[in-house]
Structures are given as C-alpha cells and as structure tokens.
Image (cartoon, rainbow, N blue to C red; front, side):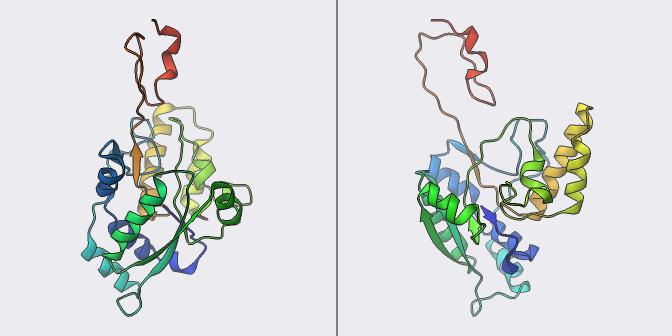
Length: 238
C-alpha cells in the first residue's frame, strides 16, 4: 500500500506509522490466502542477501495508532481520511482493500475505495500520480534494484518511484552500491536500506503469497526455489 508522499496529509511520519500499526497483516494472510502466504516485513525478498531478518513485521496496535494520529492532529472530530485506489485485474486486491478499510476504521481512520480496470488504473491514476494511496503487487528479482523504486531521480515521468519517496541518505547509499563488487559489503548496504525504508513507511508492506504449482507425479527432479520451479527444468525426467 503506497502513500502519495507529495500530498501534505502523508508527509507526517507519525501518520504513516499510525496507519501501519492499525493494520493486521496476519489477518490479511488468513482471510485472503487461508494462510498460504506470509506477512511481509519490507521491500526485498526473504531468502535473499538483501533481506534484513532483524526487521520484524509490525504488529497491530490500535491504541498506539490512535495516539500517533492524535499527536498529528487527528481525532474523532477530525478523522484522518484517505482513498485506496487499486485494480480489479487481481481477484485478491479489491478484497484486500476492503479488509484494510475495515481494519483502519478501528483506529478512527476513514477510508474510501476506488477499484478500476487495469489500464485505466495505470493511465488515470498511477502514471499521472493522481492518488492518495495505491494498492499494488510487485514481482521482485532475488537481486534487488533499489534505484528503480527508491532513488529520488526515479520520481519522474516513466519512473517507478511512484510514491515520490525522497531520502538523501538512501540516494547516496544506492549510488554507492551501484559500483560495489564486494558481495558482503553489498549485502550489508542492502540490509541497511531495508531498515531505512521500513522505518520511513512510504509503503506498507502487507503479504507475500505462496507460489503454488501442481505437477504430475510422473515428472522427477522438480525442486522448488525462491524464483519458482523452472530453474532446473533441464534436469526434469518423466
């Protein structure tokens, strides 16, 4: 769930933290996937060298969320209100938006929903950056490209910094990482980026669905991996 950080209402980090604490990610996993998914803790894939195991999935805390919203100037008489825009190209995502709407209501947040056809969603909402927040899914590589989503210069027409995330420390780290050849140093800087991004809450990371594939029992040597089952298909036998 990405917030449009160009809008004044999302510039206060207390608001973004409050919205994160109002969400129960485990409930999303249970309802949407019957537990065939895991709650997501950050921007890079688990099982990769960029994943930071020290960053835990935020746990729902409605009371703390209300306190942070109050500190930011919102209460029952002046509730925080925003719209979640998403696409019906995914059967799951509109239902996820409804669950988020229900969860956030418990913290006094009023959420409206806009569900659009995929091409209209892209052309009228995502690309022109005309949204409060967008509910999207990413297909990520085991080797991340932080520049694409997180560098300030990617906040441009045709760029993928959709939410307008600007962090000079992050920019510097991304630029340094692009010339690194030492694998251990690169892993360390990726994990540090992971922590900075999750602390900033430009997106609320929600869930990672399991990749479920059915295969004939007659096919041997199929081995699951982080990218699915196709990595060793040359070794399959029937």
